[in-house]
Image (cartoon, rainbow, N blue to C red):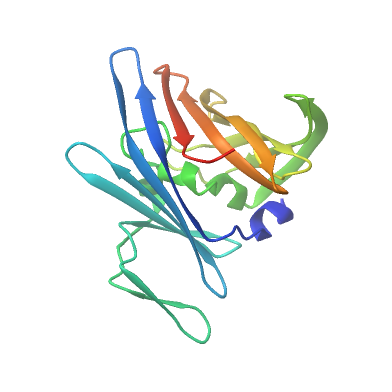
Length: 215
C-alpha cells in the first residue's frame, strides 16, 4: 500500500483510444493522458475527444489524498513550496467523483484509484493471479455515497505494485465492476501498460483503453 501511494511516476504524455461497448451500442474516440510533476505532488490529466465535446478531468495526487477537478489546469507556476494554479477548473467532491468519465465504465474516482485512500486497508493473503505473485488487498469505505463503492478487493502485483485485477462491491455486497489490465510488459526496466479494461456487471457494459506505446 505505502509503495503504491508514495510512488511518483515520470512526467509524460500518452495518447490512445477508448472504446465503450454495451448490448445496444459501440463507440470509440481518441484520448490523451498527461502526467505533470511538481516539487510536492503530481497531476494526472485525462482528456477525451468526443464527437460533440472534449471532456477533461484533472487529479492532483498529494500522497494521503486526491483532489479532483473537472477541466484542465490552464497553467501551472511552480512556487517555492508547491504548484500555483492559474485558471483553476471546477473542484469535484462527494458523489460527483463517481460520475462516469466521458460516458465510460470508468468513474472519475476509478481514474484516481480513490479506494486506495480509504482509511480501512487490510491485507488478506498472498496468492498467484495471472501467473504472478500478488498481495490481495481489501479496501473498505466507511462512508460510501449513493452509487459509490463500499468495498474493493484488488490483486496487487508483488514486483510492480500495479493492480492486476480488482472487484468493486456496493453496501449489500453486490459486485458492481471488474477491472484488469489486459496487456502490459517491462521495457528498459519500466513497466508499461498497453491496454486495460473495466466492466459494469449489472449492465454488461465494457470499456477498453488502448495506449499508443512502442514495444
